[in-house]
Amino acid sequence: MTIATTEKTSVVGIRFQKLGKLYHFRTGRHKDIDPGDYVLVETKRGRQLGQVISYIDTTKAHRKKGMRSVERKATPRDMVMKQVWESQELDALITCREMAAKMGLDDAKFVKAEYSFDGSWLTIHYSTENKNLNIRALQKALGKRFNTRIEMHLIGPRDVAKIMGGYGACGVPRCCSTFLTEFSPISIRMAKAQGISLSPQEITGMCGRLRCCLVYEYEQYVEAKKTLPRVGKRIGTPYGEGKVRDVRVLRESVVVEVEGESGGRRERHEVFKHEIVPLEELRALQKKAEAGCSKHENGGCDCGAKTAES
Image (cartoon, rainbow, N blue to C red; front, side):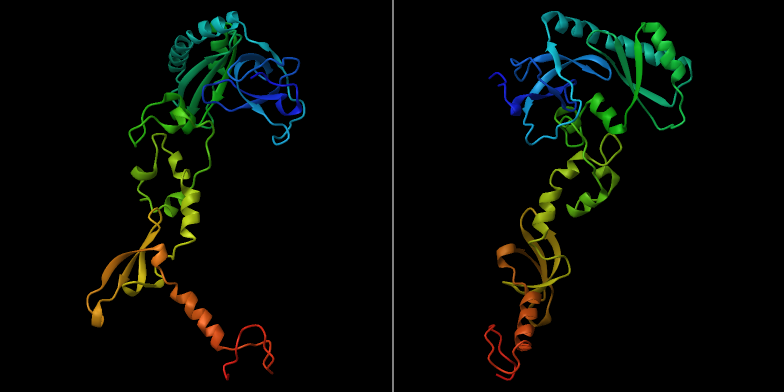
């Protein structure tokens, strides 16, 4: 379906990398653009070739001032040119690493070289923990070697893992290399809420940071826990009154420790949400009812509460 000439479909989301962010551009006078098409646009890094991913509803999306327009649809020649330059990226990365080694830049890890579609721009993605590392000499040497404009792009450990690919601790390809387009903030609180061991081996990904998957079910755990009693709370169960020792969120149940008959050996039972009797809440309501009505002490009470004397 071709984009209609309406306000809702005059903006498209374009991606320049397989799992990169979406950037918004106006369709301009090009009304025959479809999702999946490759187009040329002008960016801060010069002309770039990107793929149209989706239409953007401008009534919901934030419209930025100065939003640029699509220059034109890509031609077969543009696509071939892109493939030619992509085939040279590995050689460029190897050359960069060799030159960096000669300059003694051992604190930096160079992970990817990326050409613009016409070869007018070469971006080197690297990571380092040395904040004072100066790579201007390398950037200048690479510019002379490849006779093109060089950009040195510093990336974090998560981005390195995304570029390198491979398998995660779960045994399947890493999330960041398969479908994640952006990294969400992750905290140790998310692991605690889900009852996951805080051992570094359990919560740390291949990148050395907290695993991205910790955020996937965090909100569901938080919402589910609101409907279950906390650890240490006393509740009523089909087995008698007991204390909550563990919360099993996904099963919507709790493990309760109940005293045996005649104060005998304590027993543990799994009690599901529909079997739980909230003793503390019931006792609080009973106490309030026994306290009587504080608003109509002289009689004529119509709020439903009775005085203790009655």
